[in-house]
Each structure stands twice: as C-alpha cells, then as structure tokens.
Image (cartoon, rainbow over the protein chains, first blue to last red):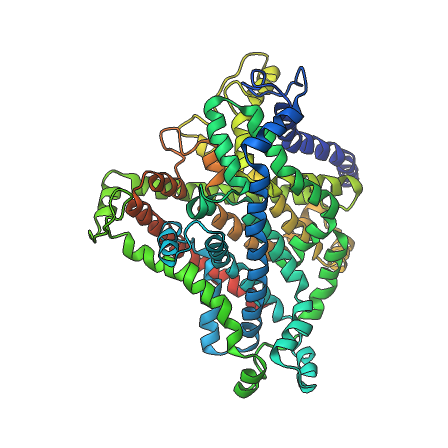
Length: 278
Length: 316
C-alpha cells in the first residue's frame, strides 16, 4: 500500500510547500518594498530585508506624492483608461456580433484583419508622426485612440468566439417583435456577453493602467500617468540612489490595485478565467 | 472563484449543440438584422490608429527621418544595411527570440506547477492563489525595480545565499553578459505566472469528475491519471498560455528596461529597448526600421499562432 502513503505524505507536505513558496517568492520581494519604503535615504542606499531603525514611511510617501505628482498622474491614468476600456468594449462587441452572425467571405477577411492586432506589434514610432499630422500629438485623445487601436483586437477575438456559443433563437424572438438591430444588440446580446466582456475588461485595464512603453512615445513629458511618473522618479532616483523614494512610489501605485484585488478577488479570478478557457 | 468555474463546467456540454453560425441566415435576413454599419466604428479606429501607422512603417523605414532636421528624404534600404553591417540587427533579433522562448517556457512551467500545487479548493490554496496574483496586477516597471534592488551584488538574495553557504556571495545577477537574459526572463515569468496559473486551474477544473472516477475505479495511480486523463484536456489552456507568453515577451519592454536597461554590454537589448533608445536619440528612421523588423518577425512567427487560435475557435 505504498501508493496510499505517498498520497498521505503529499497531503501533509502540500501546505508546507505552499506556505514556503508564497513566503519566498511573493513575501520576500514585497517585504523588501515595504521596509525600504520606510527607511531614510542613507539606510536605503543598499536595500536589504532589515527593518528600518526608524520608520518614516509616511514622510517618504508625502515626498513622492509631491515630487511624482501622484494626484495628477492618477487622474491622467484614469482619464485614459476609462474611455479606452469603454470604447473598446462598445465598438469591439458591436463589430464582433455582426462578424459572428454574418458568415460571408468578406466578414471572414474582416475578422482575420480585426484580430490581427492580437499578434502584430503596433508601429510605435510612426504612430507619433501620424498623431502629429492629425494634430493629436501628446493629447489624451491621441493616446486613447492608440490604445483602442491596440486592444480592439482582443475584444473582437474574445467576443466573436463567445457570440457563436449563444443560440440565434434568443435574438429571433426579439426580431419578430419588431426590435431594431440596435435594440436587439443592447437588450439581448450585450447582457449575455458579460463573461467575455469581464475577461477583456480586466486584462485591458491591467495592460493600459500599467503601460509605460506606448505612453512614453505618445504622451511622454506632456501628460502625467502613474507608470510614466514612476519611470521619471526612478530614472532620477537610481542615479541618486533614492531607493526609499522609488519603493514609496511603488507602494503608492500598487496599493489601489491590491485593495481592489482583496475586495473583489472572487470576481477578478472568475472574470479572468471565464472568458479565456472555454 | 468556484462559482464561475462551476458554471463553466456546467456550460461546456450545453454550448456544444449550438447551431453553426451563419449556417441558416440568408443574405437579406443578415442585412436587415445584423447591419454592416455595426463594424464601422471599430474598423475606423483600427484603420487610423493601427493599420495606417503600420503602413507608415513600410515607408519611413526607408527615409532619413530624424530629430535633427525638418525634411524627410527617401534613402532606400540604407537604414537596414547600416543596422545589418554593424551586427545590431541580427543581435537584437536573436536576443528578442531567446527572451521570448525563455519567458514562454518559464512562465508556463511556473504557472502549471502552481496550478497543480494549488488545485484543491481549500482556504490556504485560495489565499495562496491571490498572493500569486499580486505580481500580475503590479506594474511591470515596479516589478523590475524591485528585482533590480533584490539582485544587486550586495543585495538581499546574495545575502540569503551567503548566509546558507556561510561565506560572502556577490554574484552580479544582472551584470552577466551570458546569463542576465535568463535572469530577466525569469523575472518576466515571475510577474505573469499567476495569470498562467489561473488559466491552467480553470483548465484542470473542466476535466469531468466521472472520467476521473472511472480512472480511479480502473486503479490508475494519481500520476497516471494526471498524464493520461488530465493533461490532454488542458490543450486549450496551453495554447492560450503559450501564445500570450510568447507575444507578451516579444513586445516586452518594462521588465528589461527596469532591470538592466538593455545591458550589460547590450546583451539584453531586445528590439523594443533598441527602438526606445534610438528614438530618444532622435534617430527616428532607425527606430522605425527596427520597428518594421519587429513587425515582420512577429508576423512571420504569428501565422502558426493565429492558425492554432482559429482552429481552437472551430472546435468551439
């Protein structure tokens, strides 16, 4: 009966292994962030895992709050993330609905084109030139347009696959009652798309909220966003060895997301998985 | 988390008999009920902000566009011959590919291992899953800075290793011209392993209980059940995870920029780091040329990926 004892051994070992991995892989890096964010500049020169001799976390937070223009950056990030996500979800699911329901050869080609952006990298350099020609250089509208161009593909892919699993008969009932296509879409289809839209929302929020690469090219230096300001604070801070300030900024920037995760963990976890693996 | 996954399991068989899309509607039916103008906003945005800049890539990569003068003149393939002759082109492509493959392998190994470890639904496992999601939510830039501090020669990791070995240990994890690319790929994989874990967990949950029961009755060991029954049913999760990891790392920037900045001696300079650096120097045409290289590289490698994704769609 060796097999049974193996299983029993694993049942006993698994909690130990799990706890060890969580503490080692997640605990140590996060601990380093928090203790370093609480130190003085001298103590934080070589960041280590020791406790600060004197906690000055709030002084450091206040310093980066002002130096890193956190309020402006927070609203800048919000100003870009909210319209981007609303836009890609609305336009993406409209297009995906028609693409899924009308299987013409043209639509097959349009679908392939529509989802190509999942794979193909955006042309970051020439988009700057294009925005300048359109008079949108460095503006929030230009940034929102670029993000929408990048992430529409993700929505079209998730939603088209999902629409195909919804029976057409649900729509037909409303059509017979004389509902317009827009009404059918808004009242019948859109509510049914929730799992796919939840997945897309969470992933796109994460990507856009944390993006620094595209933001650097499009709005760098003209609009504050949280990652852009972290980049600025850190680029200056690494030169000056201001680890305490860099990590204070990391704390400020990550805290809202960790609070959201703690509060809505069930929804986030089910949201990520429900649309991705079917 | 269990609620959604349970509905997932319940929904699976129910979705199968759904009618084939578009099999029934005639063309007039479709025109009336699913008008083409629904496509207009999405494709207008895609055209202006995605396809047009991509088209520009093919034009401006062959000019002398720069930040130093206002006129832009065509120069033919000069940018490419210059990038190829000093070895930059091939090196950047090679580093990008190595990085992408390493990230895909590590991220999936870690994610899969965690999913198997945390498969059972109990309180400890649920808390552990949430902990592994924290890096996924954090900014990649922040993650990079954390590891830059952790992996310094006098950093905490070396201190811990030194304490175990009983002597000072001062390996420069991010300053090694051969191995730093592996270290950076490990950091990238660390950041995203929680997401892969969730996808694999959802995949494991879709394995029907009666099949597992049958395997158990037939006397299959846990290991054998796992390899013979569970792992083939994980195919969709593997496709999704490998594709997203590959594409995410080919377009990577933040983690590399925040840890090594492309160094030491430009051995971790993936294409996007090169583009960022040359753009900052005002060499716009060279940055565009490299951007076009990245586009072609990904487009070339993407066809198999797209085909797999579409095949998965057809099965559904």
